[in-house]
Image (cartoon, rainbow, N blue to C red; front, side):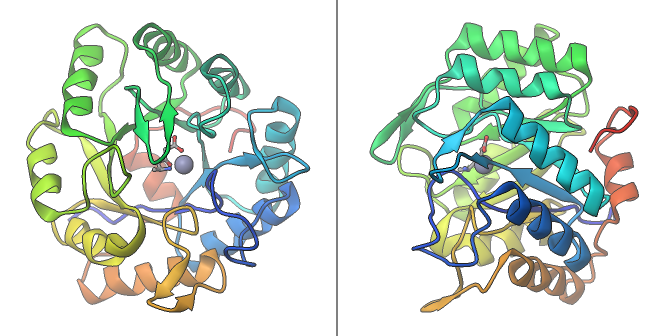
Length: 276
Ligand code: KMH
Ligand code: ZN
C-alpha cells in the first residue's frame, strides 16, 4: 500500500480572515502555515497568493517571495495554483509556472463556478500544459466534472501531459459535480491506468469524502481553502489542525502518511536546484 500524500490547501481564493481568523494571507503567514502543515503531516502545500488588499493575485514578485520564504522554513513541496481566482485573467495565471515550482495545478475546462465563471480556454490550457512539460512542472489536473477527465485523456493523447497523471477529483463546487461517492466512482473509472489521484470535497462533505478516498487508495487534501470548519459550528483554528486530523484518519485506516521524500518519489517530480 502506497503512503498517503497529504496536501494542505492553505488559503484559496475566496475566504477572508473575517470568515476564519486563522487564514494565512500575507507571504509570511503563508510560509509559516506551510511549515506548520508539514510538521503536522503534509508533504505538499497548495498555494494561492493574495495582494496587499487580500485579493487573489498572480503577481510574480509576491509568488517569488512566498516560494523563497517557504523554502527557508520547510522542505514541503510547493504546488502553485494556476487557478488563482476567478477575476484574474488566464494569461496572467499561466505566467506563474515560469517560476518553476515543483508542481502547479492545471484546470482543464471553463465552467460556472458558484456565481462566477472560471475561464480556462482550450488553446490556453494546451499552451500551459505544454509549457509545464517544458519546464518540468508537474501538473495536478483539477476535475470538477467527469467530462474534464475525458478532456485530460485527449491532452494525454496529444502529448501535452506526462505520466503518471495526477488528478484532483473536485466535488461540491456549484457548477461542477456534487460531493457524492457515486460521482467520485464514476469519475475514477475515466482516469488512465496508473493515475495518481485525490478527492477534494468542498464544504460539508469534506471529511467523509476524503476518508472514502483514502480508504480507496487515493491521496488526501485538506486545509482552509476547502473547509473553514473542523466540525459543524467549530471553526478550524488553523490549517495544521485540519492536517493533524487528516493524518489521524490515515492512521485509523492503517494507511501510512507519506514523508516529503516519499511524496517526491510517488509523484515522479523532476529534480532541480533550489526548487520548492
Ligand atoms: N479551489 C478548488 C475548488 C486550483 O487552485 O487551481 C480547486 C483548486 C484548483 O484548488
Ligand atoms: Zn486552489
